[in-house]
Length: 307
Image (cartoon, rainbow, N blue to C red; front, top):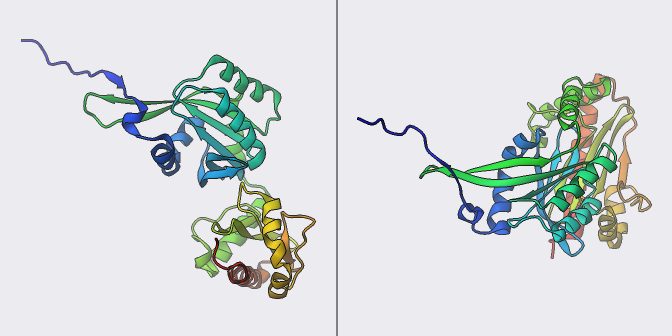
């Protein structure tokens, strides 16, 4: 008697069987499942936003690599790679200040792979360009499985990833100082975030997406500070232009000038206090928390409901 076949056949499924529409279904799905792409690239990804406006276009997904706090641009298409998307990617790269670019398509034409290869070989090492082939497969009636196959990446990428991981796992003295302070602040003010997840970055962001602004708290050894700027990946000049008509009102509410000469640090305020002394941390944490509340309230009151 013949034995039943124990093995199935792995079949490719049209992308539109998995997601009926690229923009309306695939992009939202990928935004909620960045860990699948992260595993293929070898770097962590945290969602920043989708459909991010850049001039007359909109980038599909903007993410962040929390290991080094750099922006990651993700652009996808359901058709083979084309010149149009390559041009859009270069526009987004400049407009969003991204360090890593991920281009996803079901297949790539050789000229486009050559372009990605050239960019990896001729741009500074801080930039990384990926071409990722998207497939969907299944066996018989099993659930569909999306696969991300990295077909082009920077030279020695794995070594760079491992070096970044080691740096993240062995923080510098200033990184340890920041991590310990933020942990203290989050324990004292849990509404600011999860006390179990402190980090070594110099700043923490409260984003106001409806107004395309962010209130940024930062810690330095000489003391804390706070300012307003665009959200991650946004347009600093646009934030300054947005606030310019409300300059006088906000100055009265916040007690500092707009500082329009540097739109990355609008209405910046400092507290001069030795932050390396843990004895000052309660005062610093309270100051940052209260000032952030003040800034958010001022922006909400003065700007009103977004149009």
